[in-house]
Length: 212
Image 1 (cartoon, rainbow, N blue to C red):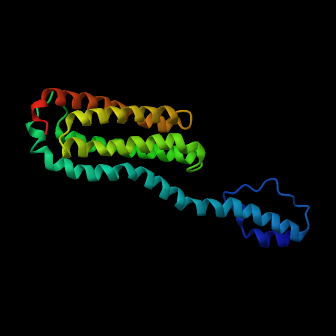
Image 2 (tube, helix red, strand yellow):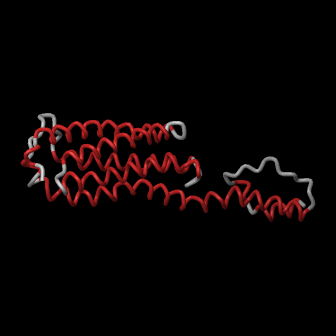
């Protein structure tokens, strides 16, 4: 029996898996089957799950940046042209700040969405509201750039940005009971949206003669 046990374990007792609680009083065949199931749970499952976990984390984190990349193509065409002619408040951040800030915010909210998705075991019924609100605010966020920089509709862009803020705030509230870290990752985003909304309003108010 001892020889059979040693042959079956194959040195696994020196690994990270804890083997306490096994019933060594079973018959040889019965004991072997029990031991194999424990081996499979302790050693095989984490290895099989690891690639899937990293793929999901990377995908969720990258997703918001996709819209940002496409939006930046529209923004770059207007920064030196139409946008440069607009009157802006003295506290308006320099143009070079926006790119790094949005990349950081997109990455943070993307990882937060992954944490919520993971906590709720995927796209389950419980994930409908927290991830649905997140998706809604993300689409609204992406739509702002074509409205403001593409169509030059500053007033409409301001209204749309208020909708982004409302859905982003609702997203944060629904995330907090699920995963506090995810909710905290949304706080810098909300702070930046506050600044962006105020800037959008001032630009709209002071440049009504430049509406298309």
